[in-house]
Image (cartoon, rainbow, N blue to C red; front, side, top):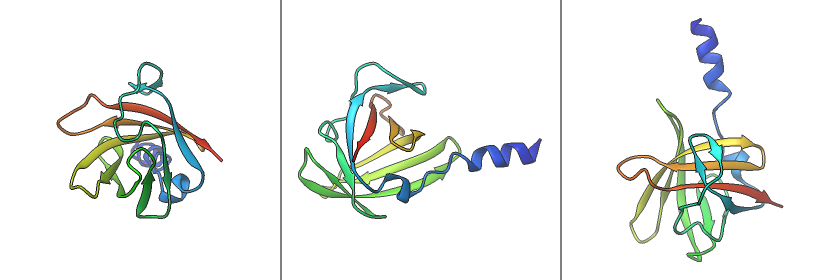
Length: 119
């Protein structure tokens, strides 16, 4: 049983390489593991492009943010570091190689959005 749990969690690891390439377009909301509803993702409304293992270009802000992926007890998390000092934490879920959902983690759990890759 322990082996099953460990192997099951390994499949959920998201790497920077999975995000790099193409433009990620906001297409929908993402709540409770389901695509749908209204998206609430300020700054990311116009999409983003992951440049490398550390930087993402946020189109609406016309700026590069630093980002970090990490594993947590609740799954994968991504942290965005805005150059103006704002830090946003999200739970990230890859639905397939060209789609991922973000849900706020931390104090504010009101942000949710689903992105698809435009190549």
